[in-house]
Length: 276
Image 1 (tube, helix red, strand yellow):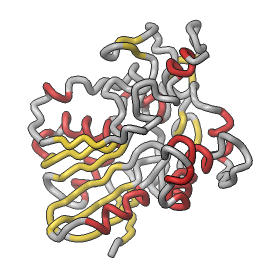
Image 2 (tube, rainbow, N blue to C red; image 1 turned 135 degrees about the horizontal axis):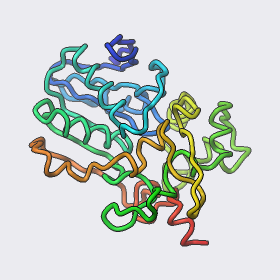
Image 3 (cartoon, helix red, strand yellow; image 1 turned 30 degrees about the horizontal axis):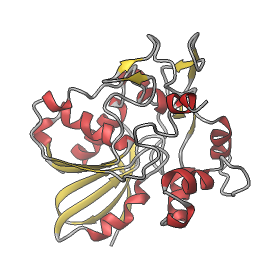
């Protein structure tokens, strides 16, 4: 049985889904998502494990509090830390998807003795999203091409209005069908994924975050507030994870047909620029 609850921590009211009992497994969702996408995994946990899936701030049913992008993903990380402490979970197994993997890595860097294992599914780059070449080297000094100003404005508008239709190519439902899965016929639990996406808070302090002008192509650079700025390489660099002293074993799972977390990702402006 999966139970839903609001947990008041010293940082915010956090919505969680829980199942089972025993060693704690904390599930951290990715961008444009929430705890509901972990239903299948929570139901499949073997005996002896307690699953706790949370909604990050600005997502799902958790309290809306702004994201300070200049801290990287630290707002999210410390929210998870506060939840673990409030529930008295002790050392935890971390399971994380996409942007959530950055939160898991940062959590482990900051609290290496409090992590038993790490499982990351389609983890984002340790150098953040966009604006870099090679091993995280910025293409431009202002990290142009990353941050809150580069995403599709039609998608943001439709997300903010809760559009669940297929009327526009950039509608949330069409994004799920075209980007989240290899093709529309492969989509699983579409209504759950869509509902999770539509619970995303939209704005300069949340998703996508504020943009800043740049003199460099494509004309936008990271601002200081919101989600996409928090995962910009201007503020996020997790490349020191392997040297952090953390000893938790890592299982890395990804799909070979993933169009989002991939070399030449189709959401990366560098890829789109190269394609003309």
